[in-house]
Image 1 (cartoon, rainbow, N blue to C red):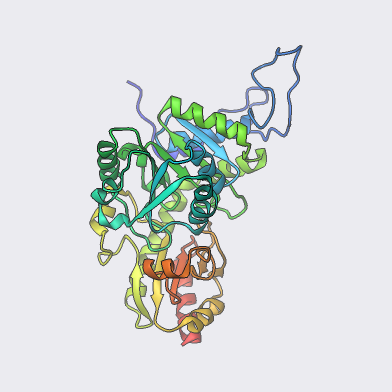
Image 2: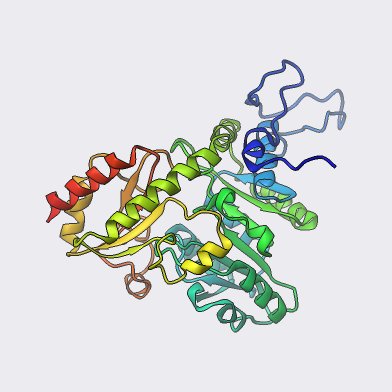
Length: 389
């Protein structure tokens, strides 16, 4: 029996055999819009680059292998990925989603697809699987969750939700999990019963803050074929260079994620001891209300931390402006540490009353912990606390 390869080996090699023509180790960037045909319909399986591109195919195979799935599809952004999945639905269909979503996903659901007749119900994932099952209707076709959520870092019991909603819906519902925060290195939703795994490859998978992209992975061939048709028809595919850059990133995913998590654990523990901080939200802390679930379904705690600063909006502004290594910027998952204010920045598209309900208050700060020397990161936060007090 052939020994199964480790995920670090898969990250570096899956989908990326040396180029058969030159032996190049790195996947070539196939910059072409079209392909020569010997005659009408006489081609080598490649007609047009929106449909067929070997650099993108390599990325899709790599991401599928990392997630333990059979099929991957890549897109021009995380929102393009979600848009393509939602086009599986028809007017009158119903989606159950976690209540704490990335602002761009919430905007897409509420201001685009609701206008097209898709109905949405939002559930607090911390309430458990039965809370999702109770919302299942005759026209429920999709359950969409982030875990951990953005920015409140609530967890969803993936296995429990998949089992509960499929029983309530008699199997007709798809379960999609946005795995952007954890990556396949720390969480494998397909193994827990999800039908689709979704990523913003802009974030940890790329890891270098120089590309925008998205992807999905599934085990189901029929579902993959339906989505591949939509991928081609809608056309929101990544460029060959964007595909290459994400492939470059996945080669170091395993070592980066380990450092992200180590740094984040140190910083979260340090923040809990600060009088300047009212609350720290990080799954790796025993104080997280779902810490036991985190240990059960995740293989690491990730690099994202949210915390509530003692003080008002103006102190939060001073704090962010005082940071020197942490860069005040949207996005996350790069090698550099970022810091942001969700209410003003990433989640400004979420209505103010809903933000308040979710706990996205004016003193909430989200940090994406990078892979710098952690003592330098701690010193930067320490001086920012002093400068803003």
